[in-house]
Image (cartoon, rainbow over all chains, first blue to last red):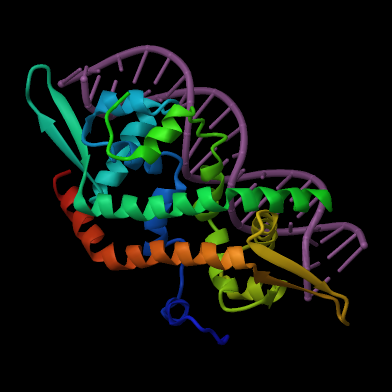
Length: 130
Length: 130
DNA sequence: CTGAATCCTTGGTGATACTG
DNA sequence: CAGTATCACCAAGGATTCAG
């Protein structure tokens, strides 16, 4: 086994790593997938109903919004509440865990913002020699 | 426009948000895509040659490894060095920016590790009522 | 050894229409 | 209002083969 300065990586390797069934990856897929991140950010503005979210995300389809919300709810990041008012409404909100997750996401977003200039420079340099 | 406690979100919204062309998303795609994250983590163990990486990632295809490396190199996260030794070899390593990015990724991974038990509980509860 | 090129399959995504 | 059902599409990914 390769030497490493990071015990964490080593641990994964030892316990056998299956990319398909990796629980960590299942969480990262919330970042990977097209919409869940944006849904979380939209919910960061406070609890909202389905159609409010739908209007808030410019190009999402109802299908994908519903699916994203279910996925996030399934993992306990979003809470779904049905109010049998008149007319009936469903509101979505971030759970504490969802807020915690969103905070980490925003950390990545901040990184992207900070380093975007450097990345653009790198791309230019890369394109130049090609 | 919706009230918010987060000026950041508001800013994106104001400047018009196109999910397809969002620069932040392009960075997040390095997390989203199946392999780049694992490649970065593998490179976190130190510089390595193509085949070493290939052997290090259990189920990756050469095609995707090459593509992931190019994408990462393009954005200045990975450095590619050709040694005209005998036999010729190519070594890959993290740039400082790549290390910085990897650190953020590991933050997310740590979150996933910490909260996995809670997520599993949430999934069970979700499955139960369905 | 380090890839590039090709083919082919599959799953994610959007559009549309329909239901409680 | 809040979704679900169905279809069609396309691009990401795997396998294989070829090249420098």
